[in-house]
Length: 142
Image 1 (cartoon, helix red, strand yellow):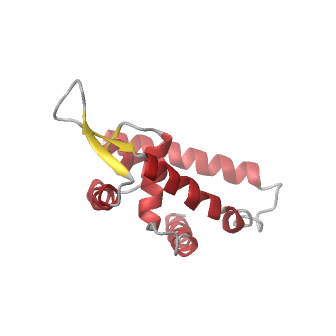
Image 2: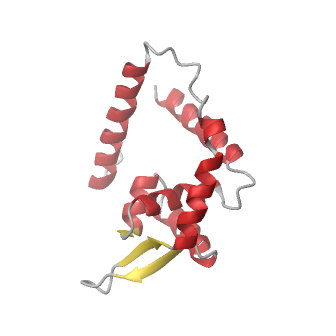
């Protein structure tokens, strides 16, 4: 099961990379930007957890997004040790523009899935996300 899921995730990642080419933002950058646009003011660790990437990878991606003017870092008003991430107006426009180009690619991504199987697959994916998100929050790998 683990090997199949690993290969499926890698294949999906490659598909995402290919469909985001030519958008003026990396596939990782778009993934992070989508999280920040959806919820301004998250800490980097929260964005990493929601974007399924490591904090080290996130730092590099956010540095690029900041450099390109899509995201800004702001100190937390209540705790100056905390830095929060916010999408700029340019970042919001870039996210909308990039996401508007994806429907032709995403619309048929799962057309091979029998509609009768969708509830089972959906339940498996939701349960998997919930389980491994909880384990990640607890700092455990198993």
